[in-house]
Length: 213
Image 1 (tube, one colour):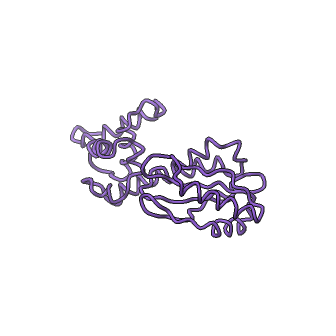
Image 2: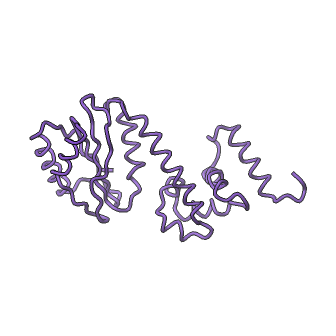
């Protein structure tokens, strides 16, 4: 590297070297974001952007799961940056999901809950998902059945039972998120759970749990 090379080139090389040498554990959040942003911004110093993102959203996780509209409000954030962040988000979901596929749920419950939190814990709109399980209680499919508003999602028991039969599922786990952050089930949550249990039982399908993320 020549003396007149941009200063950020030396910083990028040193950061990558520290990351590889330390295994990533000692790298602070803003530098981890820098490493992600390198691919999106091949030129220029991305440290100010990484720090601005953390300041704006509050944590590394919240940056990765930030809404696209909110991200675009940050100066210097465009398609490339959003794509880089979304790649990390989707990759993390797929890694954890791969741990629970073809494994009895009871043996991978912790990983399953981690996956659910990643998949929907940061969503600002309520969504209702169903995990369909086979006779060994291993995951067959994960489907978003309904999306709603910030505090309500319409759910139709017959649609859940229909999809379970189409998947030849023996059991299901119900999931939905509370964007408010309070996981306490509402009366409506309890009532719909009872209705789904009753509807599923008529065709021999078990509802193992209804998890609020």
